[in-house]
Amino acid sequence: MMNPNLYAQLELGFPSDHQSCCIETHDQLYYTWQDMRSGSAKIAHLLKQLGLPPGARILVQVEKSPEALMLYLACLRAGLVFVPLNTAYQSAEIAYFMQDAQASVVVCTPDRFTQISKLALQYEVAHVFTLANRTTPFKDSSLLQAAAAHPNEFETRHSNANDLAAILYTSGTTGRSKGAMLSHGNLSSNAKILSEVWAWQAKDVLLHCLPIFHVHGLFVASHLALMNGSKMIFLPKFDHDQIKEALPRSSVMMGVPTYYVRLLQDPQFNPEICQTMRLFVSGSAPLLPDTFAQFKAQTGHTILERYGMSETNILTSNPYQGERRSGSVGFALPQLQLRIVKENENEAAIDEIGELRVKGPNVFQGYWRMPEKTKEEFDEQGFFKTGDLGKREAQGYISIVGRSKDLIISGGYNVYPKEIEQWLDDMPEVAESAVIGIPHTDFGEAVCAVLVLKPDAQLTAEACIARLKTSIAHFKVPKRIQFAEALPRNTMGKVQKNVLRAGFTL
Ligand code: AMP
Image (cartoon, rainbow, N blue to C red; front, side, top):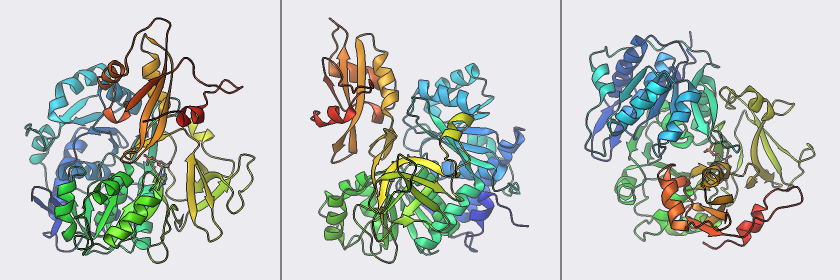
């Protein structure tokens, strides 16, 4: 009988030669398909032995490595829910996720073990393991040591298509992070559809330079390679020199626009270095038309822009065959219904702006422990409200024009102004604050803040930034802070962020 468990679905595509290379690392370590299979089996046994109920949450904050991917596969195989966290998150943030996810296990880097164990005691998380961070001197890994003695084979648990495979936390506009619940069926259906539309082949070599705590790197990129038995060149992060070294051995690269902007600054990034490449994919944030054009001029390749989100994986894509249009995210994927709806709930006509709403096998199961919020985010016809504003041109191409959900995307990472405003407002000197995204050539958008200080209070931008850096992930900390007498507000009392953006200089 067919097993809808995502691992079982991915495994169908593994090559018959188990000794061929699945992952090559930047430091020339080679992991075969058998290594991935037996490594994930050993970890799955270890997790199973903990006696956790199906669907227990495994919170993971580790550096990118093939072993981290084995851990993900092990969770799938054992029927446990993988909850990846951004490596930049600090204690206050991790404590929130531990509590909210009601995690049974936390896996962290060895350097964080003491700090995480203390939190685990406080929040009654029963098990803490470490997974070595290959870029630091800490080589110890309790997870791999504990898994080592277990068998190489593991019978992958039978999962139903609706069973949860992962929870991805996206920040909430209310400041509270929401956990998007993704099922085995959500993830495998998207991987299958993308394999078709991007003409994936076993002989492809994926240049994997995205983080694996986010939908783009963990799901879209890894699933496509695994499901098609294709090799991956796994770079720990975006590194210009490592990418240049690996490109002539690769055929597909996925990146956020910032990556492409950076690569283009190097004149050696030319058609020759891209000779074996067949596809460059961009997403997670808007690709500027300038970058699209310059990329074509400098390399001869036309970037394929697609659009998606944590809650749904990929929703739309420019065509693989046919015109890839600058400034557009292409067409809705097969099996996906996409509506563009105006504020009055009517369908938007051609070229009219509305909210993108979607329904299909890839649309998530709802927000973890937030039934009310989940209900609000689906309309009466069962379509998920993406919060993105867009329009459809006469030929069907869709473009994203903005975000109704007030989100800032800086270097591919999401920053919700409300969360940063709360940290700022908690400072004793601050009367009120507004956080806005300002266009930035490198990051796409830069997080910036406007502060109103209390009478007679003293606070410099530098001191404020330094304080925030001790509390929250650095990508969320404003790049620049300006001061104002008062925030501009409309008649409804809402801060007019458009006015602030217009008056802000980076
Ligand atoms: P995340 O859940 O972190 O993947 O963020 C999802 C959000 O990123 C979407 O709701 C969009 O606002 C934005 N996004 C993703 N891809 C694109 C794109 N190609 N163009 C514009 N915005 C995008």
